[in-house]
Length: 88
Image (cartoon, rainbow, N blue to C red):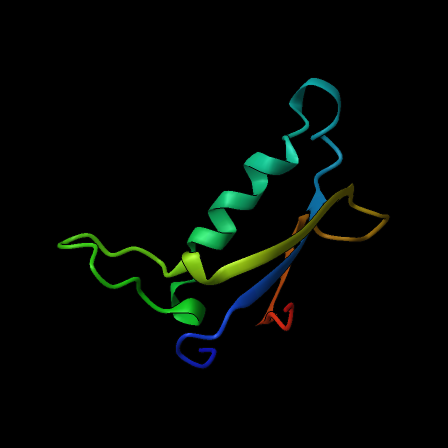
């Protein structure tokens, strides 16, 4: 987990299955939401959400994302890097 209250940058590199081309290729903006929402163990839980448990993704100030087809012998998936955001 990152220090409480620090601002966060998330970098995501999506590696698409070869079948995810053309009409089945996902939009990058739709790919981003689920991994960021799954970062509870890294970002912690947002306070003040009542009975719901929400990831504290309000701390995310910067997202760098890309998508590309898997290369030969490369498994589809995502590589996610979360670090403290040092933007002014």
